[in-house]
Length: 475
Image (cartoon, rainbow, N blue to C red; front, side, top):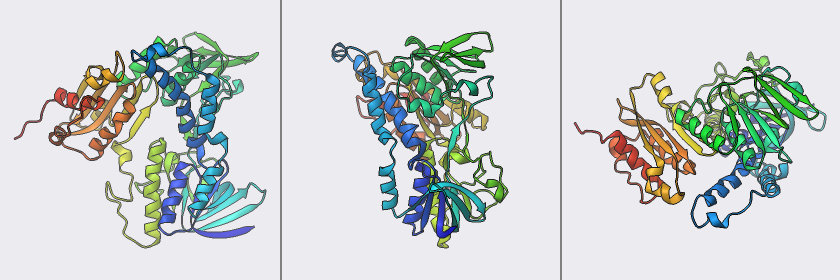
């Protein structure tokens, strides 16, 4: 059994693990990265990249159809085979050699196999070659194993061999019909993508869509899906699922039956911690480890849980953000340096609490950051909401004929700062970072009035939202 020492051992070589390892190595530490799948993780091969590659052709087609002059030049439907080939290219053909080359070029040591914690600062790897290797960490172990789809205990569901998001984003062919169980981001995006690709889609959701966001966001997505022929069953729960002769039947609690070629489960995620050995250090095996804002596990001075696996925010960009803080603080602590762990400091992920940006690449797109109005009120903030129709902004009308969209700002009146923003409409993703800067920077409304949006762009929505709120009075 080979024993090897490093300053840091990272379990999981997804985007989060890569960033933890890279930042720590830049800080002067020796780092081993353990991975039992493809280097680059879910985002590169089964989530962010392939899903957006599936969604973009439909967006581009709708954009062309939405402008007089180009609409007449568009004929026919999407070339499904070409879409799937393009998707394959963005997933690198499920070949991680390029990612491995980057990792090794960054001075990191890759250990292929399944790692588990077997003691303090100790990781035992069942290597792909069939042996075992024990890695000892002088300073820290970082768990970056992410999450996996949660398949609920619906009668017959597991026996019906459902798709998860991983199956959907890597599908080699488009089914004639698809039932999507769920109402969150994954459900909305994949319902949009497969409708674009010609499948007959039904969505079964226990309540509305995108329930954690402003209500008008989910309502807009429901309306558009229905306009495009997608059957959206709201306030409906799947009660029983059966597969017969290749077809899947989903029975709902109100007696409806939906028959399709495939069923996709998009009902949430769970931490990928089973078999990780957390019990060896006194932690629950199947729960999200509790961490502080430096991503160090509460009660430990050497164990970190970074990215989706800690359950704080299940988003790739937020995992990378946490990873940069964690990699830097591990290096700082190893060197006996100063740790900047005050809010918004170098070594903390403060934005996780109130300043998380997110884009849903549905039709229409939904982009949000910070707190919804409901969440802000639940936190006891004295808020007002300013709203405006995006279609009434000159830049939006130029962007697409008959542009339909909506936007709102959530304002903390006691501090006169924006604490949340939501934009719904075609291509609103590109509006989001300005809102993120306003929320993170706690820019006073008085100063935002001086951030003049160029005319005629969609960013003029900022001026209209400020006008809807009203110019702050100077005391």
